[in-house]
Each structure stands twice: as C-alpha cells, then as structure tokens.
Image 1: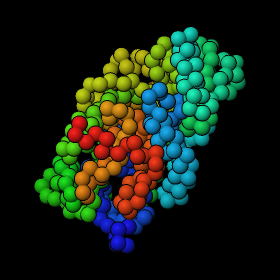
Image 2: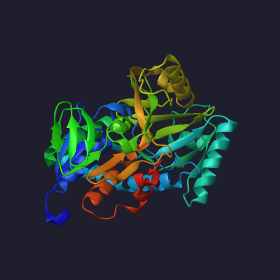
Image 3: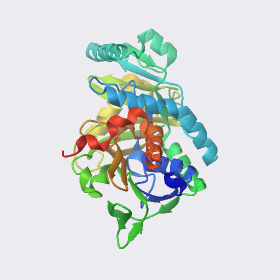
Image 4: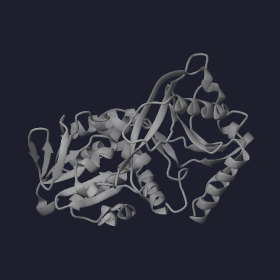
Length: 370
C-alpha cells in the first residue's frame, strides 16, 4: 500500500463485485467499509451464474472475451480460497457447457460462433445430436447439433454470495446498512451525514450514475427475467452441464443447481422496472422445454427479474474516475465471471500498481468527454 500505510476504503454497492472487492481488499490489509442497505441483493441475487466467456463471444468484442477468459482462469483458485475463507462451499460447478441448436438457422449461428472462435485461436468441439445425448441423456429430440465448451463453467450465485459475505466478515469488512446519495474524493454522502475515507470505490451497478457525474450516460439498466425450477421425485435429474443456445433465434440457458435448474434470461431495455411478464415466462419455459423436455415435471419455485448494469460497449468500467474515487461497475451479464479479475484490478490500482493487462480496455478514461 502507498507509503506502507493502511488505507481506509469505502465501497458503495454490495453485489458480487462489491463483495468480492471488499473481501480481497480486507485480506490485503485495507480497512474496508461496504455501504449497502441490502447486500447480496439486486441483479447478483437473481443471476444465473454462468462463467461463459467463450460461449458468449461475439465479433467485435474481442477485448471482452480476453477479459472474461482471464477472469475465468482465476476462478478455480478464487473459489478454493473463498471456500477456505468462508468455511463453506463456493458454489463453483466445473462440468462445462453445451451450446446446442434446434433448427438450421440456429445451427448456422453456432457454426459462425465456432468459426469466429477458431479465428481467435480458441477451439470448441462440434458434436452431433447423438454425441450430445451421450454427454447429457436428458436432451430432447429437437436438439440437432451443438458445441462442447468444457472450459465454460458456472457458479451457484446465491451460494457464492453467502460465501463472499462470510469471507468478508471474517476478513474484517464493516457492513454499513445505509444508502449513499453521492460520492466525492474522500467521502460518501449518506442520507443525513457523511462517511469519510481515503478512497471510495463505486460498485453500485445500475445506480452508479446517481453517485458521480462522470458516470452519467455510461451505465444503463437492462432487465432480465429468470426462472428457478426444483426437481421432484418423479422427474429426471438436471443435467450436470450448463445447456444453452439459440432456440429459433432466442438465446436461452439452463444452469444446473443441486436441487434443480435456473432458466434465463430475457433481455429488455425498459428502465428500472423489474416486473415479470407473462410473455417472458412463456418464452423461457417453451424454449427450455425444446432443449430439456423433462423440465415439465419440475416445480416452478421462482420467477424474478434483475437489472444488469450495461455500458455502451459492453465492457465494464474499472479504474480511476477522480482523485480518490475508483469505479468497478458496468459488468452487464458478466458480474460473476469478471469478479475475480475485477477485485484483483482494484487491489492493484489501490496499491498504485499496474492492473492486469486484460482490464486496461475497461478503463473509464475511454469515455472521457463523452
């Protein structure tokens, strides 16, 4: 740390990014206070927990792929350290991902993905429908072909959030159950008073633009509806791997949990509303049944929606906003995936060292004067 002295850090926002940063910074010896009236809620509580930079790769987003892949490489060690620090499970599932197609147009989309990844030197394995059912026998007859991506993993988001909270508390993080209205160098303005510190880190997701003027227009909410299903004694067991893919052009994913599945997710630009729509539930269930017909016997236990913090270029914002003000937000649908690398970058920046190279394209300075 600077001049070998302990520094007082206040983080504003207690989702997966805020909790990961708080835990890691406290473990490094910083005094850490995390300000959030309801930590581990919001989009992090609703998330599917996919750790899938390869399956979600898109032409023109190579920097995002590199950032995600670098963070994914850190996940096994991050999970092991989290499990030890929290004295409980981390929620990591290392069984991999299958990306599948149900019609010719969807298959062409998968072929384009494989070709794009090949051009970047990243190999995935094409599988026939028979091979796919050999890997995951509960796949339905509509599945025609797919890609096996063993390196793309998943995490039980709620197990991970609980572990992060325990690890942060054990490391000495002080939780401040208050709402922040604004941040400035050396201070966080609360409802009726001011919390003073050396450095503020904004990890507030979709609410980040309300806290600092330099974030105006850089983070917007993107609603995603998600379903949680529980197995029943008469139902087939859930797959071991994440199953995802386009179904008649609509993206869907089914992420296994110990007791069932998470199905997601719709995507709407609809402001800050988090209502779950009938149409969203209908599409999610219908598309999921094309891939795994057996889910019709599952119990529907939750229909929820969260607000992803999206940026104009889909890269997060990780870096200095102002003297004494750092930002780590805008992770869109990749908060869990990018959490280990983001926490590492924040720690390096606070110690006045160069952050990991993969995070440099995420520097908010790219939007200066926007």
